Every structure is written in structure tokens, then in C-alpha cells.
Length: 83
Image (tube, rainbow, N blue to C red; front, side, top):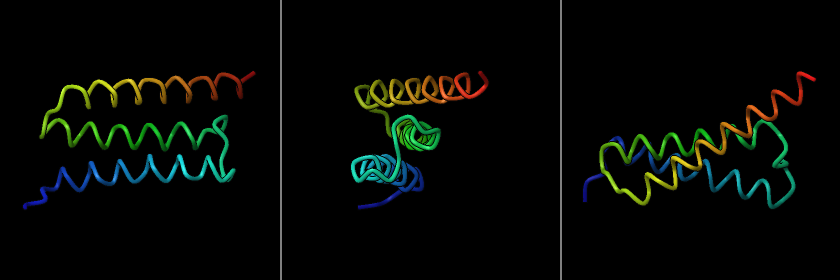
């Protein structure tokens, strides 16, 4: 089995999302924090990079939504902070 560079990127993205969710569950971060949405967005983006090279439509759909929702969370945080 070969492990291409984009597989490493995608696996790193999965790791980021899993660690973020674990940190949320053990109350080390809050879903209201900037870092939560940032890490989720980074993880989704990394997975999408790997999916560009090894396409899977259902995975692209879920990761695209994950990224869009994360960007929404970041914008919401920034707009709330600006007030």
C-alpha cells in the first residue's frame, strides 16, 4: 500500500478534527471560541485537499459543509467581538 503526500495531508486533517472534538468533550475548549471553528475549518480544508487528488463525492460534500459552517462560526465570532 502506498501513502501519497495528499493522504498524509488528509490524515492530518482528520487528526485535527478528532483532537478538536476531543478537546471540546473534555471542556478544554468551547464551541463558542474562535479556535474551535478555526481548527474545524483547517481540518476540513486539509481533508478537501486530499479529496481533490482521490475524489469521493459524499466525502467532498460533508467536508465542504464542514468548512462552510466553520467559516460561518469564525465570522460570527469576529462580528460578535467587534460589537
